[in-house]
Image (cartoon, rainbow, N blue to C red; front, side, top):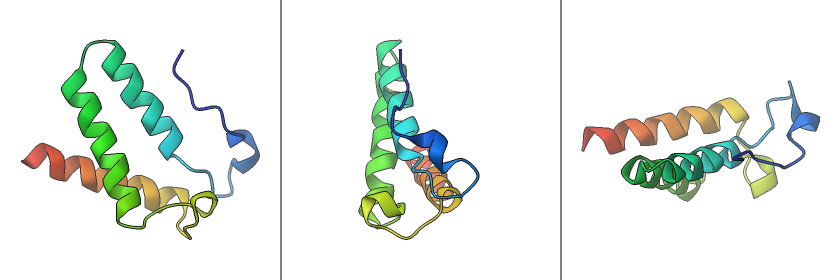
Length: 82
């Protein structure tokens, strides 16, 4: 099973849920099915997003769920353009 387990239901509809746990879980699942390169890129995008300071309040940031997801998607696009 690959799922983030972190009180995410309490955050529903507020725009404050941290999506990085779900993305990290996805990276683990992708690695488990043998797609190691894709898993590495997913984790690089997570790390780059946080490294740029784009994070939700639970990690000490001030960004919404949508902003974090958009930043993550940007990082993925940059990794696949290389």
